[in-house]
Every structure is written in structure tokens, then in C-alpha cells.
Length: 328
Image (cartoon, rainbow, N blue to C red; front, side, top):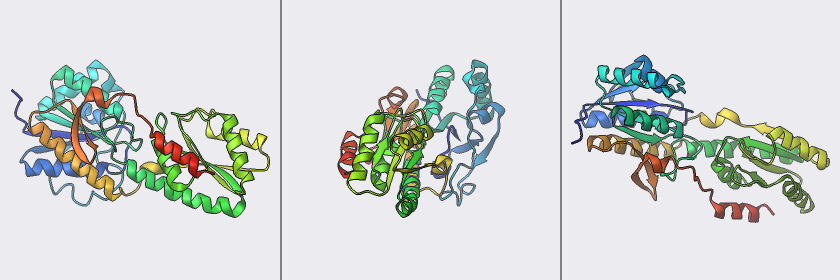
């Protein structure tokens, strides 16, 4: 028999993403609606270990739906990776009276939550919040749409100066292990080439593509590079290689970096966060645990952590094909 849930804890962990505040708001207000107490932990798992928390009500989360970042802060906790750290966290939850946890974050957050739940029989629900969109079990993660729009807007501006000066720009975007941001923003911004971890384009093919662009009359080009791409050791060495082999190109590098994580979340991310977190609260109250919520075919579903943590983040092959066709 599932234990009665009277108090739900919520935290954000790992890299921040736009829409996390909308998610926190949804948890607090859903708890208020169902007359359940809500406790917010600061700095993720570290806040659980240090008993750094606050009670959250429907009114305490007003006016945060449009804010970027996370009011609960975020951190990666090395202490929680240890048995002693998790034991301290479990003791604190029991002392505070927290019956279940909602974890907003990425795969690292979910892995830690799965282990913690299994060790101490604490119901846990994961909510995917990461700009990388690299969580199986959902078509979209909270923050991904906003990050895409940020990248496309930046590339549009870079293209203006690239065209003005007949330059080739390498634009590095986030995505250490997954090329979703690079591929989708590259197509959306009309990039000539897109380099992603899932596909090793190879230096020779890159050079041939840029030569073809030059022959076709293009005076400027944009190459979007995911930070985890294997074509070169890093984007600067890639640029140096092209400069050495194609001296006609005036090459520049722009690394967009952490600006992709910031800013007010898009309407899509606010709505997604709201839908996922209301469902997370309802699942806990229905006795569910050790699952993550996700959006698949515009329906909110629950997936067990094993499925959600699978490594096969398949890239959209059709989008790759479209990218090749449109780069002529």
C-alpha cells in the first residue's frame, strides 16, 4: 500500500535551464490545490544534505513564471555521491517530514534520485529540465525551446556581420554529448554546415563543402558547431585548420556559451513546465514513484527511470538530410 503523501519536496539540480522557475511554481501551486505542504530545497541535493530549505506556498511563487534561472538555485553535490551524504539527506527529509521528492534536472539528477529512492524507499518523480534535450522518454525538455530561440537569434545577428565583411563564422553552441541544439538551430538559422557529436563530418568533407559554397557564389558562411563535435579538437583548432587550407576565407569564431541557459523562458517552456509538474504532483499523490514525466506526442506520460536514462538519444536523420539539401 502506498504511503500517504502529506509533504512534497522540490529541488532544481545540475545546469540551470529557462523554465525551471515555472516548474517550481507549478509544483508549489499544485501542492496548494491538493492541500499538500510543499518544501523547496536550495542548491539541489546539497540543500537536502545541509537542511537548507523553505516552505513554499501558492503566493510565495508569484511573478516567477517569466524569470530565467531558478529561485531555488542549483548545484552539483559531490557529497551526495557518497553513501554518507545520501544518508544525511534521508535523515533530514525524515526530520523535516518530507514524504516524497520532485527532482527538476537532467540525467545526473535522475541517476542520483533513483539510487537515493532505492536506498531509502522515498518516492521520487523526475522532471526533465535541461537545454540539451538529451533525456529519453520525452520529446522536449524544459529549457530546450528557449535555448534554441536564443541561439537562432544570435546566429541571425552574426550572419549580418558575416555578410557585411564576407566572413566565415564558426558558431559553437552547447551540446557536449548531444547535437540537438546545433542541428535544429543550424537548420532554423540557415547554416551552411552543422557539426554534431552524433555525426563525424570529417575535415576533408568540411573543406569540400566550404569550397563548394565558395564556387556557388556564397561570399559568407555560417558553420554551427556543437561543443561535443569530434571533427576537430575544439572550435578554435577547427577554425585554424580551415584558415590554413582555405586562405581565401576570413574566419572568425563565436562561442555562445552560457547565454544559452539564460533569459525569460518561451511560452512553450512555461507551458511544458506547468504541465509536467502538475502531473508529477498528481502521480505522487496516486502512489507512483521512481518515474520521470515527459511529453510524447503532446501527451504527458510517465516513464521509469531506466528508460529515461537510456543513452540512445537518436538524432533526427530527416533533419540532417534537409540540412544537406538546403546548404547548396
